[in-house]
Amino acid sequence: MSGTSETRIAEIETTLRELATIVKRRGRELMYVFDITPPQFNALLTLSENGETTMGGLCERLHFACSTATDLVDRLERHGLVRRERDRGDRRVIRLRLLEQGERTFKSVLAAHRAYLERVLRGVSNEELEVLEHHLQRTCSLLHSCRIDTGMVKTMS
Amino acid sequence: MSGTSETRIAEIETTLRELATIVKRRGRELMYVFDITPPQFNALLTLSENGETTMGGLCERLHFACSTATDLVDRLERHGLVRRERDRGDRRVIRLRLLEQGERTFKSVLAAHRAYLERVLRGVSNEELEVLEHHLQRTCSLLHSCRIDTGMVKTMS
Image 1 (cartoon, rainbow over the protein chains, first blue to last red):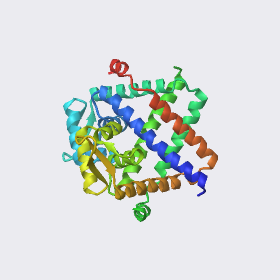
Image 2: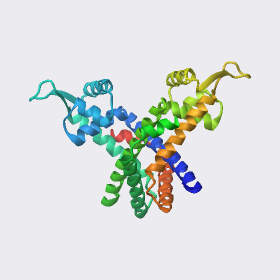
Image 3: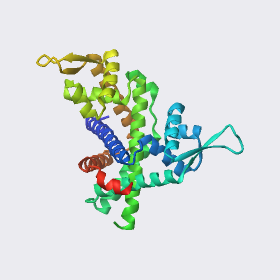
Image 4: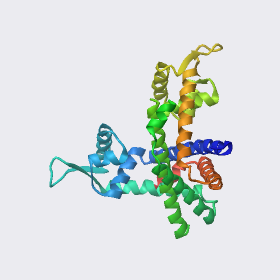
């Protein structure tokens, strides 16, 4: 790797970390108004996108420990956003269903996110938005397609 | 807002959320190998960049509740990464100092982050990296410069 691209990589690393932090912070600030937390929002999102899900399926999708998911679903159920239901075929399996109030909360948070982003990007031309989106998506897929090589990291630790 | 840019905003919102999630996840996976958590890494980063910091200063920079910061600093101190020291001028004030082992851990994590990103971006040309970095930075500053309008969000909740 040449000196220039080494500096470039270091800069991109810093920027990506900063970007992830500010995106997460703005999300948390916004959800706070709706009285939900980011993991709760992610659970509602998963249920809205995938329909009914088992507890195990939810843990897997959200990379949660099962104890964390139980607490989280308890709270969502208490607030009337989701409901636990026993599977008709296999009574041992518990499925989660998004209730109307949950769908409404989820959609409001999403709309508020978009309204905020619309303000953020107001001064940006359509052409630039297109290029910007392309690069954000490209970065996203590159990161998804390349896993952490634990063995290599261990030699550095 | 026209239909097209409405769709565009919705897409960018999804992509930004996904990007933040994968960046945070890869960071967590990598730090796991070094036996530290992302908030612990952020504390080391703050101390490395700003030198000695008071507990209050650390909480402010990391947007932590003070009880969270106390637990976190306890753990870092137990692992020999930082040390609490009383201020010489004002004995009531506690300052945090990054120890040699802390600086070493911090630098190793950063190097591993960069090595990972170098692998991620290996197939991307220098020209494209420049454009990509520009857009990531631009998105970052736009988000930083535009706060959540809590009043507006409340009307949507």
